[in-house]
Length: 461
Ligand code: ARG
Picture 1: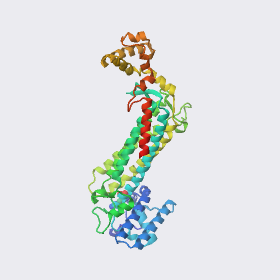
Picture 2 (picture 1 turned 120 degrees about the vertical axis):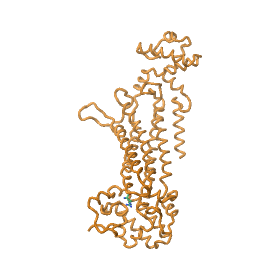
Picture 3 (picture 1 turned 30 degrees about the vertical axis):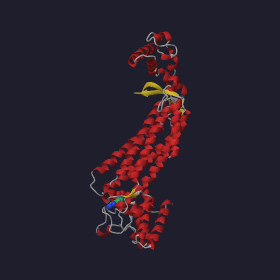
Picture 4 (picture 1 turned 90 degrees about the vertical axis):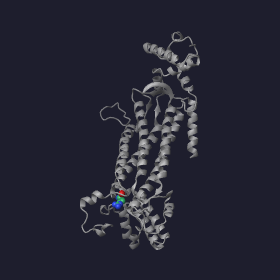
């Protein structure tokens, strides 16, 4: 027996079988069932309070919907493509279960405001989960940064050795990126948490509904101001998708660094075996699959953002079926973003730093050249002249194949008579990082202070 379509009154011919499957969304939008039921219970409660339903009808609807939720969760609910989407599947089952009261649930609403409400409820929950997952990754970074606050590594610009930095400082840079990401999501939620329900199909409804009450029941900040706008626009989903793209962009940059650092050429870190895989042909290989996959997934998340923007751009007001296409990219974004954050939060604390190797790499690239220039400036040499002097010293180091700190005092003094034997203090890596001792600088003391401030900031939230 086929399920009767809830909108079939004006139709005399059945839907083409292919069209039925082509237009159905139940296969993917069934994941919204909890929010659909939550929205319907609130709607029925409001209808009863406003005298549009009786209290008995409200109770029958509520109990019926709760049973349907249980059936879905225990796998005893049969989804039907003929019933097109999650909304009509649930409503049709409700009517089968409780009779006429079920037919009254859709009074004063439409699937257009219903689906917009469901997505917002779904996104509100997912944003919270994602923010918590970012926080977990941030905590992992704080702990690892604290452990590595004194670890010296080369800092790069143009991927060329620039100046010594501490690994803790580098990890705290990642922390800051994620802090903005988390804040962006909280901000996005302000525009997500607004209720379209009651906008009905597009123009509102003739029933004396109380949208403030429904909004309160559902924990929305307020009902939406304009019915045409709120059944139509998916800008809140696009905004979320943009925030997700930024998070993935950050994770991708981190991935790239982890991949480079774990190569034999850099040899700065060792990723735990549990986050790597081997090669079926080359026995020596340990591949950084997890960061590579996260870097790869970034592409599809960017793609979803462009997909959603394009989905929206040509739509006249108000609701159009185009919008059914918002769900799969959104769900895929949420799933992959959560997965990427989770795997990163688990992987970071398990990174081993190769301290000696990082140190040797820092020694190789004349990383303390700026320190020598600053030293000369402190002794009275104008900065541009100091730059020139140090350039010559570096050239000598290149010829001799040694670091600046390996040049003798005589060799250094040949470039400037202002150099004395205290110069070696600034040429050490520890001296170099310790000297960058101001807020935002790489000195271990500053890194520790930054970690402390970050911990306090998180605790105060
Ligand atoms: N499945 C639809 C969607 O996801 C629900 C709304 C359908 N509304 C309509 N008038 N056809 O957008």
